[in-house]
Amino acid sequence: MTKNSQFVYIFLVLTVLSLNLANAQALVAGKVYNADFSDILSGVNVKVVCNNAEPSNTITLGDGTYAVRFEETECNESDSVSVVASKSGFQDKSGSGTISRCEGTDCEEPYVTIINLGMKTQTSNGGNTGGGSSGRHYLCGNGKCDSGESVNTCPKDCKTIELLTQTTNTTANADDEETTGTQATRTEIPEETLSETTNASSFPGITGAVIGTLGAAGTFLIIVFLIGIIAAAITVRIIRKRNRFQEF
Image (cartoon, rainbow, N blue to C red):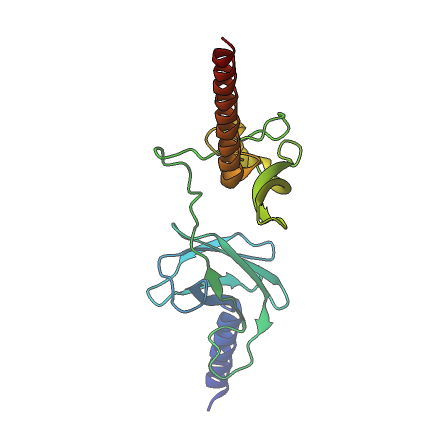
């Protein structure tokens, strides 16, 4: 090999090396999935920013992958990278990473970072669609136990009310005569129960009214006693008339 040919060979090698150095880039790549990473998302807009370089925008492919490259002068080893993914119907998702040197045998670029993202489905606000009932509302503190209030939710307006419940007790005395007595028991009923009952002023908690303080047997005895008095009076009057007639 002549000196001229050696010079040409060395020049070509240096040229190739300089071209490789000039084309050295940092690769930022990854995949975009759904929230639980069970499926990939294609057509996602991805914005990548490395260090202070201009943002690079791309769209995920059919397999969910994205890839952007930065010049080595703009994005180098240990530089920070941020990625933002956006797609209609999904919430925006961001991620970050750091550029590292690729030391594998299959490295396409000398510097690389992999950032995968999982996007959540966009949730609707679920506003009022119109129609139907608007719900029940009440004002606690207005001095009235409104429908919907209770002792627990509004103790200012709804208080516990004690009702007297009358019960009739029938007992037998030593002469086998039945006597009837009235006993009052206290029953606590929340006020809102009364407000939702028809004719609450009639106190529906009263379980029985007293027909008579003496009961059915006592009433019968009184009637017999009155009949006896009337019969005695009639008898006395007849006897007096007979005596007067005999005197004449």
